[in-house]
Length: 114
Length: 106
Image 1 (cartoon, rainbow over the protein chains, first blue to last red):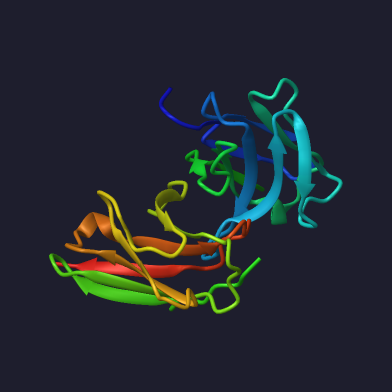
Image 2 (cartoon, rainbow over the protein chains, first blue to last red):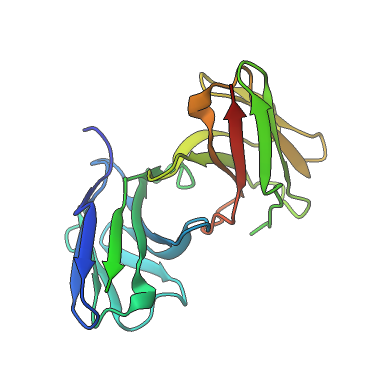
């Protein structure tokens, strides 16, 4: 296993369309996180899972955003009715349960909403 | 979660030590200090973490003051590839703040 992988690397969509991103964490990691990052800012937390349970969601996660981790392995982040303000890098990270603050990040999905 | 304060930017000459400070005056007794860095267009990368003792690994050293209210990340011989944004995180802080943008110059 070489690390956290995210797909796609880049996504261009038109305003109002739905988009879905996938994250495959490091296989033995129980925790999976989603972050959003805009230019000049650090990563902002969106949500995290422990196994298949979604344990925390940020207020940034509006009702247009939904994340799933159905079998406690990969996760998907869906954005419905995209807006231009959703343009950002979406980062996924995973961590082992014993050292939950030691995050391993993927390379991210860059979303551009036109 | 404890809040951290870092300078927005720093410069360092190639080959010299880069010392990146972080203030975390509200840290709790059982909260670890974590450092990450982010090179342009990549996800953040874990560097090192510590509780109260100084730590060293192949990437960097972490010096934590005795009162644990501040720490310093040391890159002993900075290279151009160390140019990145460095984030100091305390405890289970899920947001990264703006970090310190380190520029290593030839």
